[in-house]
Image 1 (cartoon, one colour):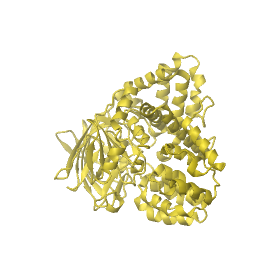
Image 2 (cartoon, one colour):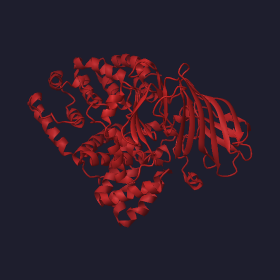
Image 3 (cartoon, one colour):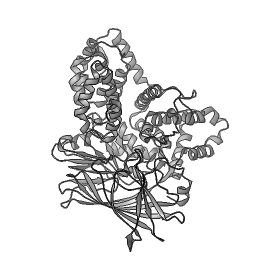
Image 4 (cartoon, helix red, strand yellow):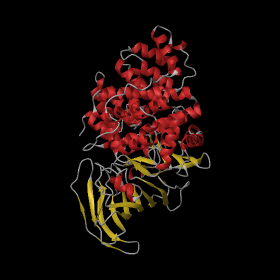
Length: 602
């Protein structure tokens, strides 16, 4: 990142770092992974870029044990003094390091806490193979500081090299150039030549194997999961090629997927070169691979051009959702992409209802100061951001919008972008060329006002229209077995289930279940849409499957609404507490933190 870029960034309310004074530019990381103590230990050496005459380096930490710090240059370092700031429940602690005159690097010897929020330590029973333990990280949004002393702001980018030592029978992977097979020593070396922010630092260690899909794509997974994953993601190279046709060359050399154990809290995480994905998308029919298209799109929107602070999160996710659906349209046709758009729109309306029509949290540009930025990671950034771009497409046409987006990614690659700077760029490059367009678009209402501006075009799907007709037929008395469901994708099933009345009695659900075996579906999206109805109706044949799902799956998208539905059911509070007690050890801290608050756990 250039000096001018660093100086122009807005202040990040979630970081103690002062990159306008001294910023990190390259990391040399040496770590040992200890599964017995659930800790990482080693040395982080930061090479620095001075923006002025500052004599201190400010880093972010949280629950790290700092053993020693030296500072100097690549030839000689000397011990230096440092000070930890007062702990903050959200931001952790500042680490203020004194820099000798001319110091170009610092080395920090440290150890993580067994409770480090970014680190998920799984015992063998929590993995697919049930033979070896597993470790994975989740650094977004501000959890990199729990396993690495760093400038944990999305506006600060750095390159890195790493050496990681693990048990010899395991494979280590990072968001970097990766090995494709394990070695006898259990020592792995990594290099990331493209600059990334700290939230894209990632590490995974476990019983893993690799299958190539093309010259630049492949799948990592536990051996027992690898065949199904290889089949599910057979179109991965086609996705990358489709994305490049839309918005320019892929800039990260390889694009591989790592299928994680079920406790992963998200659908996917766009760690550069190595997207982490949940096994809940292994549906057997490639019907849920739009999630992979989403994470791939992040290779442009998010990883290549990054939100400067978490208040600007929509710049990552709004572009990514729009891009994802364009990829899926290119591969599978407009009617397929339209279904995804309607599902997203439904989720947006639900979030708007939950947050309230006047909530400032429904603005695209957020004010998350003093709050965990995780609170801003909801459908507003994703779907309202996408809806703004969809509206712009509606007003000026795809060809011109595509040219703008492609140039935006090209011109700002490996840089960060805040909302004000993006609006200025949008005006200069696009809006000002069309007098009256900004007012017609109602740009200010999208960015700094609640709800959805009236200019937004309707969102429709022909395939869903047919599903809705089938739903009305069934509600009107047509037997389940006569519904034309043979060619339905999981999206059509989810739309059908979302459309069911809230007060359906158990016998009607039993009829559906007998015809379509919904309770025992292997598709997580279908199950997540089905179980709230079974809970509301007291349909007991689904109870055991629901509890097994909550214990097995750690994806927060599913867990939160299902626990809410369980809490709302008769005797649901007691059942929810019992299931959560059993399931909580399987959940990542990102999920358990949300659920602890929901269920009143301290």
